[in-house]
Image 1 (spheres, rainbow, N blue to C red):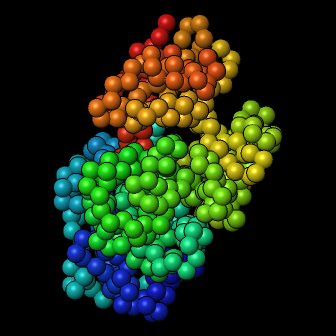
Image 2: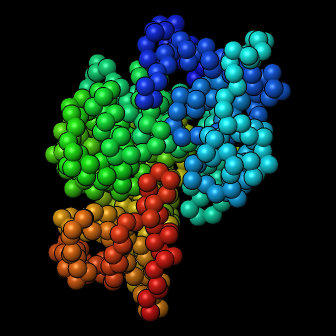
Length: 490
């Protein structure tokens, strides 16, 4: 099955059902099928060929989904562009992907045009589109998307996702939702960018089930709650930083969010107090899981007997294993190891980067770079990133463990732990903390609080207070920026 055939199925079975809702605008499956057909024909009439790339830089909107499916139908590869990239960064992605054309929102088009790529700031008139020849057949293994990673350790790499991988991603996401309440008619809320894999997870889940997806153009805590109340949304996917703002807004001005059944969260540490506060203020579960652009969702907490603080269990269709990051041998119970993933949703590799592809794959398994342990009950626990592990005097320290200790203090809103160079210990533990509004907890108080649950060598050497932690476009805390902005300790 391809994404085009999936859409065609829904257009035939439930043509008048809402596929997309964005504010007051709605589009049925029939209309999405027809408009994406017309757009696909326009691409081919413009001289684009299967395998060519089109870039898209647009806030969440019905137009984005139309462009995606038009590209999928024509065998053209869509290249979503992060909304916050600067012109030089956009130019790099455009050049690396070899994009022939870019569709950019009018407010973003100037930055794209600086790259020299042909840029359109509106969709062509579909009524005026030339009648197209029959669309070419598209293989399940044909590349469909190139998603550029954040580039936290250098230039971003383009993860290539095939039609087959995207269909599998939708199937996995939909089955996860189904497990929580079998038979539930869902209405997914998309609050993260469609230019990022997290937004695609929500969209593909809805499309696999043939159910509506509500799009928020940009994240705004009040808009999230208003959309849940207005459209009776049942599920969503969020990043922890986003949920902090949503909960603050709900505490300030409660909305009727009784339709919500579950909020999936990941992309960064999901503190247990945040999950508990979500249940208190929104009346629904927050479920932590693990996913990457290259793998899709892999691990998540089950609806029955979830373990707060854990990542949960791997999805039945996805194979995972943990290996020692030096010897590459399997690790024992409760021992941290690098998570390897084998999945039908796996990326094909990195665009025009065979060296990075070879480094990322190990005998058919994808090396995630995540340090994870597995307990005796089969639940997985996130222990940090391989490149983020702090080695103090020869002892490995997981930033995640220290963050959880600090998050348990009621005055702490956000925290990120990093290692800084030290001439004696090699590295020492440093924490950046944002306090809750009106709270005044001191550095000494927090260090003493951490000492109650952590060995002395894991307690932060220093704690720096910030109004808000720096974040990337999806709300993920930028530990690298924090590390570079703090003074080295000697």
